[in-house]
Image 1 (cartoon, helix red, strand yellow):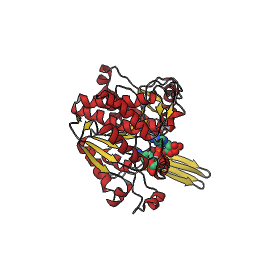
Image 2 (cartoon, protein in one colour):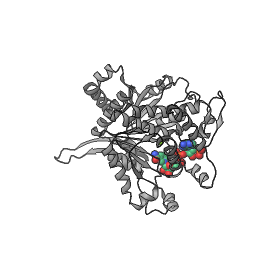
Image 3 (cartoon, helix red, strand yellow):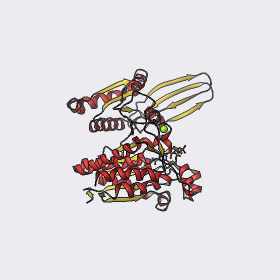
Image 4 (cartoon, helix red, strand yellow):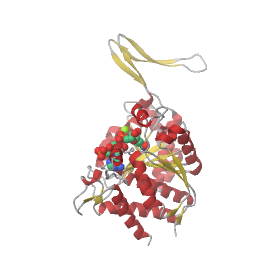
Length: 404
Ligand code: NAP
Ligand code: MG
């Protein structure tokens, strides 16, 4: 008897090696156990091209209406890809399109197993990074200054005459200048999503910025978080035994390294970009990192943090067997199933997701693993390098044991 998943999950297929692994994961680890209505959207690069990328928007809207989605990695076309796949044009990044429709924040979390010790030995629990994915240096304007002169910042209100201005710098020779911005609405939404996610996941929340130097800009981020906490979350956090604290980014960076983990670290756009890559590589491989987009509209999209693993795919096309790691893809599925189960209040679905995750961890902990992590893993128990297929097969044997 298969487990019935009460409401649909939006399934978004993708490209290259991750598409190959996606099928195997479904065939061996999902479909044999679950009776689930998958709303399927194929974001293969050729399908996006055929539909003038309408399929990507349809997929995002499907997540809005069903609440939970799981996505395979997709190619973001470059000029090279336009040639390779003979595309009409270099379509936008699907993740950017989906994020524009759903809004929200991406949380990235490493998957820890006992025999792969993070390079930072004090880390016992995952450090989840919440990155504010709007504004700052990612939508900056910048200028080269070639000669003497003054740069000013000027605000011109749409109504009324009064203009605010301030001098940025009086240049006496060549230099550079940059302006960045952010929006109260976006920061408030980011803060709310972080508090909600920390509470759901029972994690302490840290927010860090540099408000001693940037008193107005970073100071504003800090006060929005502070106000949001006092107004809407303090009581809930207290009841759950959780804490919120602000700290300076440099101070937090130093403390994170000494912590045992188990925190949600909320960061501005650039800090989040840098720190999430640092945490990922300190924990092992990109293939051991999951990612979830939490939308303020109440929906969730789960995926692996890595891309389509193009180099492995070309080897696969030549008929070679690859040892690509499907762990983050499997955790994207288990994350989506767990959330579906929580929203539907179906314990058997939640239990299945947990059993699936345990089967993956125990497989790796028994020494069976893929090429990307074998070099970092401890040598007891003895290690065995396997192909992607063999790895998934080994997981499925453990999973079968739970449902005999
Ligand atoms: P990538 O697919 O993340 O792969 C980079 C390298 O990391 C691989 O060549 C491989 O190293 C290693 N790696 C990543 N995932 C692995 C896994 N599951 N198992 C084993 N090794 C793994 O990044 P990319 O090559 O820069 O990007 C390829 C395509 O993915 C691009 O077209 C890009 O647009 C797209 N992309 C999509 C997303 C998304 O949809 N979320 C995110 C990022 C990139 P070795 O080759 O050394 O083994
Ligand atoms: Mg980055």
